[in-house]
Length: 341
Image 1 (cartoon, one colour):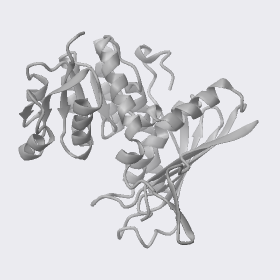
Image 2 (image 1 turned 180 degrees about the horizontal axis):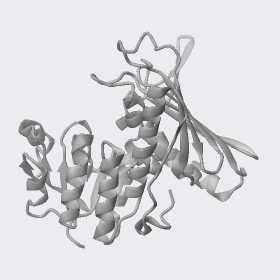
Image 3 (image 1 turned 90 degrees about the vertical axis):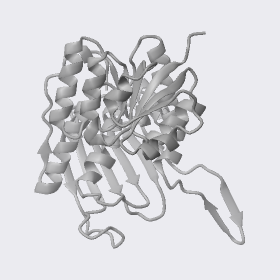
Image 4 (image 1 turned 180 degrees about the vertical axis):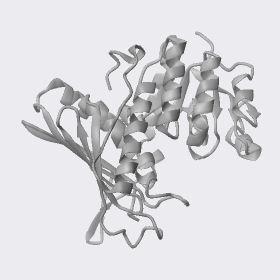
């Protein structure tokens, strides 16, 4: 059996620490070879008990560490572009958490760099494509039994928003997952976006426009609406219903344990995305490791990361202007021809 894939993990915060745990304890065929984080204490805590994992203050030092064969980027979004370009320069395969870059200009630079390399190196971390329910819905839509999709109704709710969360981040951070999921489920690009806002919830921090109602148009004429509510107060919920010409299908309903006692019934509601999508993250990272060990790159492409950035920017513009905003994508490079959405 070949030696485990040596992975450098960039970022040891909430997401990065979870991926370090996953690579060490859940995923087969990989090991944590190096970790980079400016907070040395946090990085050391994340790799406690992992033999031979080295800790570094910056990304490039981790990429150059002995035994590193691949990179998992879980640092804050503004650091992603530089890390991706550094990995490309070394020919290292990458799994990069979203956003691929903090803006569409950076995403375009990443796409141009990978295109110059002449082959795919990066998989972008849109983990919903690996969720069992989303995969079942995708298969159902692809086989055509329900006819042509007409609408997607989506819900994205969080218990509370992090400090310094902005109204724009409801779209370019939260709804970015629905942007990719809609493109993937429908196999269509999104062409325009409109954002509507009710009066802000009393539970939202002062100045935060929460919730929002986002409507996307697609190149095939379907409509996608997203209720995004990041201070709902009760749990983390993600739902999607596809309405087609000959039927409808919905995922994301709560099917966990139902407890009945003392005249009432209740079920647990996940409080965190790492709980709701734990299996999806496990499948995503395992698929990346397996493909990398075969010398392949699969899953969401840099084009998908770029498209999500462009659509999100159009959504933020629509929020700020109060008007319908069109999506303008660059020409799709041949490197991504035939990869689908």
